[in-house]
Length: 319
Length: 296
Image (tube, rainbow over all chains, first blue to last red):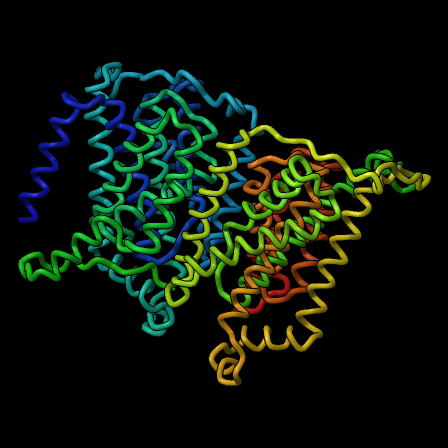
């Protein structure tokens, strides 16, 4: 059952660029990886970061600058972006995990705003214009990615690698400890786990993968801009996870596709996008806290499908 | 003079100091409202910035369409916006008290998006000017600088409102109930005090305080749908620095950080946007609970 579903998604992903506009798909994939990285933190450690845009957007600046100004190859540029996000994640994570719950959200939000002001003022980021027309250099020096479909498969490969890493993390002993921290932090401490170290590692991993998504997005659009480091972007990734289902593996992917599709159709309506996003936030929080995927899983397990295994939707980010 | 030794003309120094005090006044009023709401409800009110903006808009709309003057707006806007806050609390927020506090944060964030989006749709992103009331036009010559009357009023007025709030919460019987309900709502209810109603009114009061700050800000900044959201991020940092444990702590931290920001503008302007966040990082390293905070 599970294998069939995975195969179906894979076939769909391989066929999609021939049916749907590849740039749209690549955008959705980048946001899906971003949302999964974010969900690793909120869904499995119970830490709600409200500043993940700084890793996503920060990495896109680094990638764009490295490829455009320094002339680095595409793949090294993306890695540089992810590396920069990793460094930022280490510093910000070390600071933010000193507080919990609501304070953690506020601290990450404030730290991310610092990155925003840096991007606004620093000479190399191009201020309001951003870094434009980043070239798509051939992969490994000989595979041209000027064509959108070719680039799509490259982006798909990156995202699948990211998803697999997250999946592996969640179901590893390390991931079990993270969940233990989410459920009951004092208990995890009393069992002898160095909780802060686990939290920090999860934070760094999440930041790095968010950076990987951001760097890839900079290559796809040939652009790094302030939109990606604004706090509104941090809010958007929260919304993606919330729609799909916080603490479910596939939820953030679904949420990302929903939001990106919605933005695509509502782009001309201007401010209504904000209003609709707000309304979705309110509805999800009040009525469907488990998200789309979480609700489906809950319905599934209620209706006696015993064969589905241990895919237990998590109810809430723990205190 | 020491100022000349530092290579800064006193005019610029005092000018920025005053600007810093004014910003500090808004930080103090907004973080005070957040602290009062958080204390009783354990909800961090992300809508606060939008409600501050609503206060300014109620004043501007009132003046434009109904001829409501500044002083009347100072009374009416907090009541109107506070009432709208109470409606939100009764209809939506109330349903989340039994859940993780993070859901309250997400809900109020969604509400902020809705309110801001609606105002932007209606009034665009450009600012609307709001005239300084006649009684506060002009300025005083203090010898070393000119002090505009309105700005002096903002600093003094916000101090009065902040200290008034402190007095009510820390020194009156009503405040004692409030503090008791913060510590142990169950027990206070057992004594026959209507805690849910108190929570409702507290939320309305905190929101009203934000709206009051909005009215006071209207003549200084342009009345603009985005005026609240960017300010809010700074106010959150202020709240982390001060810790939400104490009312006086919020007031002092708010004003002090405004002044620090103003001084940074004089001596190292590039860092003026980020100095508060840097201070927050330092405070987190040294005293994670915040300067006046208690660990809960």
